[in-house]
Length: 245
Length: 312
Image 1 (cartoon, chains in turn red, cyan):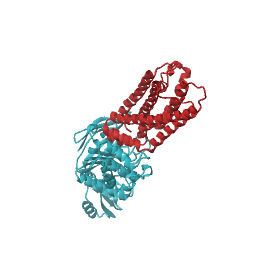
Image 2 (image 1 turned 30 degrees about the vertical axis):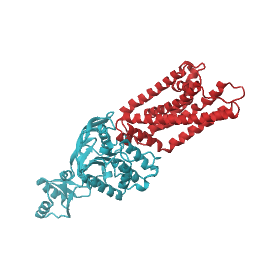
Image 3 (image 1 turned 135 degrees about the horizontal axis):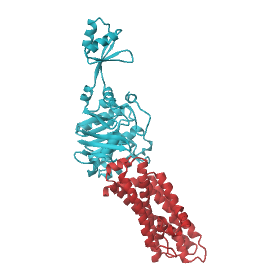
């Protein structure tokens, strides 16, 4: 398995797209958080300030990380490299497993960098405008850790979507709008159901507090992971049964 | 040594590979011949367990997916274009080498071997077809395998490249490796291979040494004469078969040229031509595949393709 993890890491790191998306994710997070915290006015409660510090960025940043995950697998079909890849790693579960591990780890590390950069940006802006907050609070630190976990899960979810759909344009074209506003649209019709949908549930990971939210962070995380695992499982079954060509 | 047993593959109601069994021996180059659409690529994917189907293939007694480091035992080139265009040739090989614990030092070796050293650090997006074939060969040779499976490796190569690949295959076979190489370019195969596995419509048509395969094919004598009808009748009396060709000549089989000349002299028949025609691999191949109702079909393609056009 180690050998395949190394192989997958070489594939990921030798693509310039990987690094462009990573840098875009970091810059987007910094820009969104900077703008959100910059809009804080005098008299805003500490809770709202922390909320603006942590929750706006993941909505857009997830897209970059999802795309990374999606492309990791679906590009193998797009460019036909799945054939030499499987020739070198004929046990399909191992190939998929190695990809999930590499993308999951990359998503976590990138997520940590993104979160660090955006949080530092936001804290700096808040202290410049004279509305400082302290992040050394159990709930806030949990939300920061949750953000990183959220990004890691997004990366493997993308891999699952890629192996399921195989065409990068289709996977991206479906998953992007769904992650951005699809669940919100469902929520406007079926408000009770919406909180159980993957990204809405997953958002509990980085929500600062469970003010009136129906799910607590642990349940939200478990649901998001379950959705992701289901997607990967279906993708895995199809991957095992399909021909390479 | 490769042993393929009962390989079969169907797409819906269409049978692409039909109970195909053959053996490929080490130290020889074995050509895998068949017209386009006859199931060669599908067979190779079945052999490597990339596609699902019936039957199995053993490489020195092991199935492909059971080999711990498969590309160190069996190198394959199935699709030359299977590279991400934004990745350098070197990084492409690096990832594949890592997957089978092949040392990085081997990468420069194979680039040297296929003559791609100068392009090793370029993105493959700008590669020509010939360069893709060379990269594909480098991929196949990466693990220094004892067995090679190559699907149409000469496609898109210039004459110089074809010459190069021929001698490379000969050298690899001389090392004792098992080489299984597909082609629809029969003329090129004739100068490269020792053995043949010939298929048509997914079925085995022949498995033989090259010489035997050609030897079994018909030979004939072309005759031109103003008295063809009479000559034809006389030859039929001797048990020879004759066929009138489109250009007005008579193709005789079952009688040697001297016998035909003697017969003509005895009967005072004027001969304008008496030529021994030995049939090439192409004709032997067409002969062998004609019986299977070949000449046609690519999967997913309803336009008939005449084999003769491709072998010219």
